[in-house]
Length: 256
Image: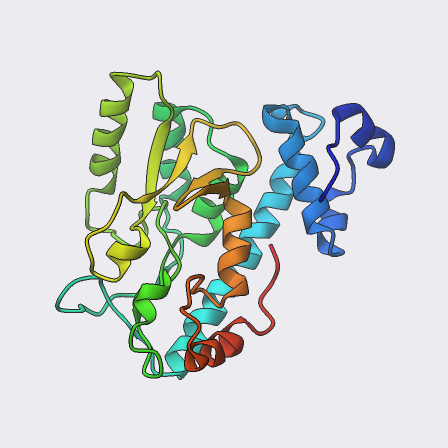
């Protein structure tokens, strides 16, 4: 377990500088631990630029992982589709559109600070939807395939802002609780089965990492690393054919 690091001890050990270099050198766990320890202080001028650079590098790695997974799944005959009875074909990944920065500012103006990793995701990654069916794994949608939709890029003709605005308006009537931004159906709905509420991110939040709420709460980067360790499908049931697919999918993916 990583020890608790205070502001003073972090400066003594590292001077805080070198986060990007250390991240690239394989010290991702330490870097994220230090960034999380700072909380909202990560926005201070001494830290903000380098912290955001780490988050941007995280997003570039995540995007590379997603593009790799999509290509491998297509090679294996995977069908990407909606979570409906018709299994309507749908694009699995849509990069950020021209309005990504504007959408980010729109969220910030209405909710408040957005975690740095979420800002990076909206600007660099876009929207991902890996729901579908694998020919060697007919019930692959039950394994909770990665879905993370925060940029609105997968629905260019839909009123995504209108939907989010309704959620924000309801929250603004009673701000005793944080705002929960929906980012994904839960693992039941991905499998076209009635289940619980959507996976969400807690806002406002001025931290570097975001707080992801699924079946349990955890840092968003921890959730993404868990997903990529399982090739995009973090809930396999243990069937041998499934693990063979997962081993092929996860090979060489970047750690965030």
